[in-house]
Structure formats: structure tokens, C-alpha cells
Length: 325
Image (cartoon, rainbow, N blue to C red):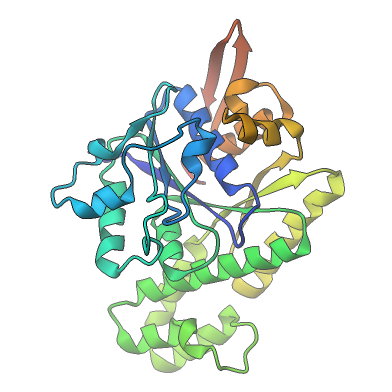
């Protein structure tokens, strides 16, 4: 186990926004740059990430993790055919595997933390179920994928809000009184349509003045990355600005816009051909987009060039900023 493992979770408020495509190609970019990477499919019960890698029938999956007592993460890692990149499959169509209990979820978390790698990319299930958000918050860097449509933006804001309040609830797990106040799932019948941060602060202050500093620290440090997919026009990028402004206004969350992916037939073709677009053409517009997104996450400039069926990589580390700044 390496103590320098960096975990990146990629989530979305709804399905079909291109989350898995982005996660796969980001993992490939980092593997090609020379880092030891593991791509993990955590969409329990509906896993299909293996198809994007050209893997037809994964040999191992989540069901094997729960059937064995003594876990060695290496036993569940599959070769991808890409240097430095291993893959951990989900559970396929195992009945009930989407509804994991607390003990099973804990085993998944521990397995991810124990990976012997430089980076782990977690492709999450869509939606903001608490089990999903706990995996999202497990990461060092959280990436939320959205498309320019208004419905996707609304789901993205809900996703960020759930992630934040889940993080707050976790912070106060040792204080039942404050925990109950911060757990907005207990207030579903409330007349408050938006559980705003200032309202939460007042409730916490009313219970415990010392808890307010802890609350403010969680809010201040919760800084997810936002990536827009299927951008067709320059005006589509305005949706990213809107999400950032609204998350700041209602949640006081400093969401970071870390890039976008253009709408491209090359992306769609990569799914049908089961060949990641970054591998097929690392100089295509969507591939260049991915390289910029990875740069925003890692503070590393990565440039990929394909010549004579070989991919050449150049990278430059930005020494003026640390990881995730």
C-alpha cells in the first residue's frame, strides 16, 4: 500500500451525461503520463465501464469481494492493455448488489484506500444516494459532470448540496444533537424549500456555539470540480458559470470550473468501437479537452501525440501550486 494514493471520484446528478467516458479517459491520460493508475467501476448492479475499455467479460467483480474474507486488492485488478492502468470491475448484474449494507460499503471503501497505486479514479453511479455520496466524499478530489441543459444543471446543484450536507453530517457523527440538525434528510417535511447554509448556521449556533467553527471549516474546504460535457457553442459554457454562482450563493461552496468536453462524433464512435477516444486520437478536440481537465486537477501540463501507432507523452509539473489547489 502506498501512502501517496490520490483518489478522484467522478459523479453526476443524473445518468447519461458522459461521466464514465470522462472518468475513463482521465484515468488513461494519467496512466500514459507514467503514473500507476487504477480505474474503479462503483456503479453497483449496473456496471458497464469495462465496455469502454474493450473488456467484454470481466473475470472478477464486486461479488467476488464480498465472497472472500481475506482481501488482497491486487486479486481484483484486471489488465487493460494500457501501460500503468489496471481496472476494478463492478458487480455486473448481481441481484441486489446496488443495495449494499453498511458493512459491505465499508469493505469497498477500505479496498479503495488500500490500492497500491499513485491514483485511483472512481466512476460512481448516477444520482445522490447517500452510499454514492459517501464514495464521492471519500476522494481527495471530487468531479461533478454536467451537460448544458437546465435539467442537468438542477440535478448538479442538488448533487453538490447532498454531497456537502453528507460531509457535514459525517463531521458531526460524534455529536448526536448537532448531527440530527445537520442531517437534512430528517427535514424532508420542512417548509424550507432550500436548506440554505445560513439557516443551518443558525440552527447549529442555537445548539452549540463551538460547533459553528467546525461547520464553517467543512463548508470552506468543500470544493468540488465541475466539468461540462457536450458543449456545442460558446454560450453553453455559461451554464457552468451559473452553477458556480448558485452553489456559492445558496451553499457557499467554491465549485471550481475545471474544463469541458466538446460534442464530437469521435466520442460517440469510441463507445461503439470500445476504444477510448484518447487512445484512438489523442490530438482530437475531446482528447485535448481531457488533457486540460487533467491539468486542472493535477497541476500538470500533459500533451499526448500519436505517431506510427505509438503515443508519445510530454508533461510539465507546475511547482507553484499543490494538488487540488
